[in-house]
Length: 220
Image 1 (cartoon, helix red, strand yellow):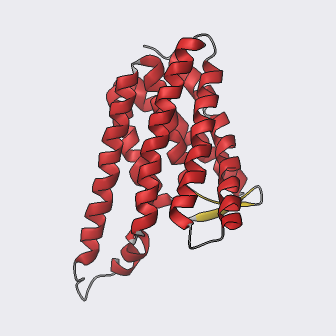
Image 2: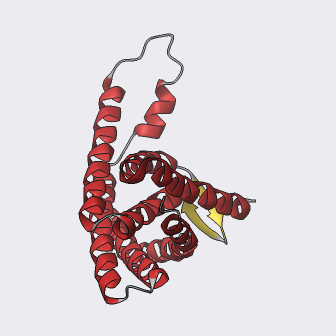
């Protein structure tokens, strides 16, 4: 059932990206990028098995940020896409800081959610820093590569979308895993984790192409 739910999740999330852009233009995509980075940091805590691989639910939401910036690069401008990443990075950092401050408060004797919040919001400084850094770098790289390919191959939307997204996803996965887990896991284990995640994210990246075409057709 996880495979079925996974494809439903992809369709729903990517459809929301297209819909929010249709309704609110570039401002809608700025909002989506902020929503995605916050929800991804929450859903990434849940691990599932898909196609025999173990992965987290945050993958689709993180992937949706590439779709959002590709839509902005395609329909608006490179600078708009970069601005969206700056806004989402600020939102993600704000979310992390505020939730960590929340955990510092001593709960009331009548409180029933504090332990659950500790489980959900407790973060590793190292992995959080690695996640935010690679989110920023990979998305900025995606924007630059996409816009370069847009000039060089103006009639090949599928090519620039897939090449930029898959290339940056692969880079992000491997660098994140090394930054977050060197010294904790052995190098072969880290490579195995990164490779598994990359395979899953390549599948997700290929799925976002139809939604980019739909968004381009829905100009008005």
